[in-house]
Image (cartoon, rainbow, N blue to C red; front, side, top):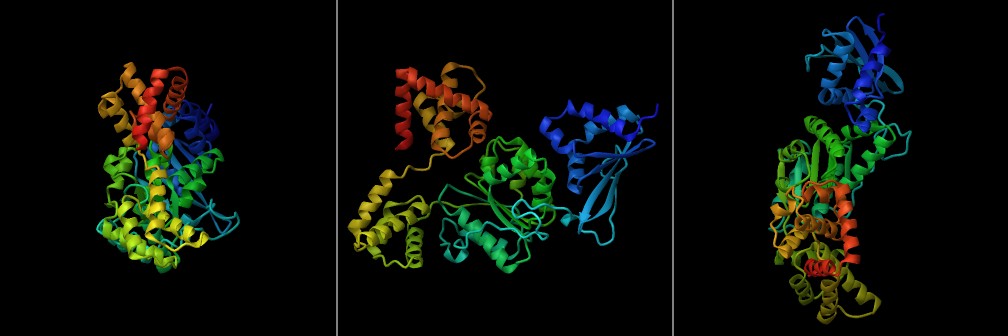
Length: 473
């Protein structure tokens, strides 16, 4: 009995389902509709060109095997990509002479613009026809309010070049890295502001890596991953803050990899920030890291004394404050590592002066700085936690991350995970990826184990107290 297209594809799916993850199956195979079977050629309908490209890159091997099993060695596959333009359905077929890849015949309908077809915008109210998104930019973050110094000269110069010609320089992607509080977000948002001013027709979007991951998870859960992918393909300038948070998130990395490729190949601009340079990032796929290195990686360092003075003077001027030079010099001398803390000191000084009707004096500044320095817990990284734990137990970083079940090393690793969770902003997946390549469940188990031991083992609790003191110095 001859098989029809529905039977053939149903049988293929039964095999595919056992060879891919449930999420991948729901996302990439359930939306496919078998259209027809003409001899040994099966035609399947997919929701978009991106969907087709993703199947070809990721799943063509398993599709090939199942089709040969059902149809025979001469099996061929055609893709029918259905687009909706101005609510009128049109067909745009892509044919692959299967199993040879990349021999693609594309027949586009006259005047069709498939890149704008049937896209749902996750950032605006449904029903808006044009892509009119909120770029999520802070208008206070501009180049005019960003003080240049030796610590950021290269980064600022490159940022200005990118803003003048987004996607048209060698700085694509533009990868900006440095410790927290040094002005990375300010600088990348300044690029976005300039691009929107010079090119109002361009779609600019700034968001954190965490927000991107949340949206991706929701898209998978709601079975509208195709709309999510299409939306990001339409962005002209995409700014992702804190990409190190992608660590350990294999599915998110895979999706971002394809978005990155599409935008880069289309001449769109990508801007990324991180707390480390690409070469030091852990828990990220090598193919993604290699792309981060394609453009320019520029660092922002802690501001030197002259730059701190300039930042404080500009901030006081912008806020309408009159600050004696000796006060500015005192603050710049005593708060050295973080721009955010410098600005926080000025805000506190202004508040104290205004609320208590006091003059801005050196004595008042000394009180505020002393309180800030004592109460402000310094930014702690996962790397720093590992360093302190290793020093406490006399281990090397390599020993801590090694695949061993030795009790003393396992326990030290669990303690490092415990403090990383409580003292850093890193996700469980990111912590696990940086400490031995573990998953988030392992980190969660480690934290629970350490918490239980603190309650039941006095000697263990002493170790914890000693390490905690070192971390909070």
